[in-house]
Image (cartoon, rainbow, N blue to C red):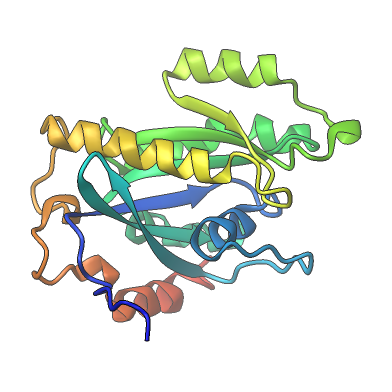
Length: 217
């Protein structure tokens, strides 16, 4: 039998949201990071899903609870519940579809309207393996990220390129922010000691979001 490791043995729980247009690869980034899986059968996420994975930062165990949502407009009613308590975000676009990069500014504005000012944001140019189809230059994205004071990385969920790095960097930066107590934590789950109930991780919350967020006009 393998060594038993309690799933809830962690020092920090950080909620990280994936945002960006539909079809940019958010779900595959999530499955690559949390399960090391990639699906060529691309299907749209309906409502909200989340997965978790723990990593070591310094000598602490940081558990990431990563939320994934549909990028389609008709699911936009989920925003406030989706963003609540988030301390990090991966804002994803597709390097082969310039329109998904153009929409990054709107996503960032929405994110900042719903979260703490110190939220850690990583701009992610996904599908970087499709080099012959590239429509967004690295320079263009780097310039935007510098202007907005956010992090930037290009990834390929297919080739598993930089996926680990992107999530790990976000979680490490969140840890540094939280350990400096710069985040307006209040009741934020990020600093609840282990053993206490973390409301946002309950499945009921996700179900509620799915019920209320799916078909509003």
